[in-house]
Length: 155
Image (cartoon, rainbow, N blue to C red):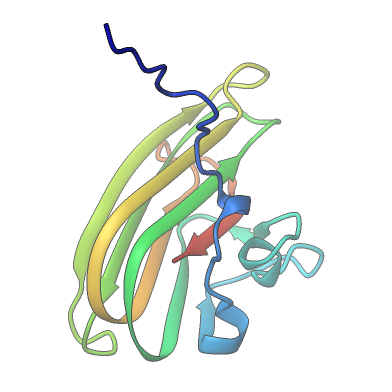
């Protein structure tokens, strides 16, 4: 009998295992607001994440210098203080924002201390991306929660 042991030594690929795109050098970012101690750069690199200065719906728009082919988009949201249900919409444009196609829309309920992290890891096949846009509604019930984003990475 021939036998082989499988799945030995394999591991899940995490965001730190990838060669993520350096968004600082290939794109411009537009945001609706930010807290100075938690700027958007902090979510796009290895910082502590971005936080909105105002409550309510927020937009993060990444404008690429040149059209790109994207294969993976990684988002991480953390909330360890307030129970709330947030919603996000991720969409892309191939014509510099004249029209958009939805990638994913998701609602997620944070319930500290137990449920405090949402991770979304999308495998995509998007060619000619000029704009990647993320809308965040931090509390769909209309509360005064502030949007936040711990990580946004693209490959």
